[in-house]
Length: 350
Ligand code: SF4
Image (cartoon, rainbow, N blue to C red; front, side):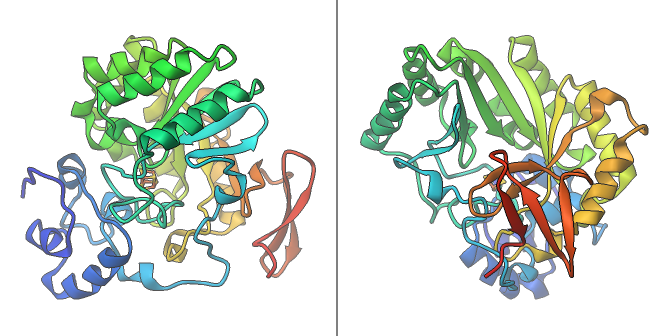
């Protein structure tokens, strides 16, 4: 059935035919803990006859989300430990995250910030918090790149985005502004002339990192939205999370990476899934991830190769997870080295 507005409750999921009515109560329990939103475009992509549909798996709540394991963390990549002022994460010397908003047009069931996003999440920065965040960026001359993430920054109105980016324009040492978003896939109609003008309002080099995990997400509408951005001079890169039951298949991954390149989006990051609460059913082992990343070598063009990375729990940053960058200590434990040369246990001990 066609859906004409976002789905947010177990009842609406049942009415839309996305869950069985017998599952409604269990799904309601999940929805009361972790936000739910499925846009009409995403609902249209779901094959209701396929019980293992890879799009449904990413967005339709699963009772397995209420099964937690000891290694999981509410802040898996350690944003809090590197947040000098509200809304800023300063983990690496030359770049910061600016988290202006904590809502998204869809809520991914594996989200690494699932404890922070949604209607009950950290909300949108107040005027005073935004002043402090911009002041922090202005006061740190080593900040070369500002990455707007959240939440999904493209849910903000063009007027608010343009205002915020106009303030970054005035900071001479900021040269690059990057947005991390799912909007071109899940709500392509938002990518209109006003939004594109707002994205460029910083007057800096503008990058958009598109989050997509399965080739079916690159619909004709999504590809057209990406083309509008790219034709306006915005550079696009991709980010994909490796997810069991979604893209843990060499053919699916190859098709996705080719789809990005055909759309003029350079494959950038392939993320090992984070230790977010209640997401064990999505996680694969390091060896499985390495084999999948390796399967792309030779099979598809060099243009189609993303970098396979892991965000080291505790806020130690990203590390490449190629076979020679992480060493096994046996019994499912590993040692991985961060960008400062410090070694860490994975999963963390204790
Ligand atoms: S769009 Fe990003 S921040 Fe929002 S739910 Fe999905 S993964 Fe989380």
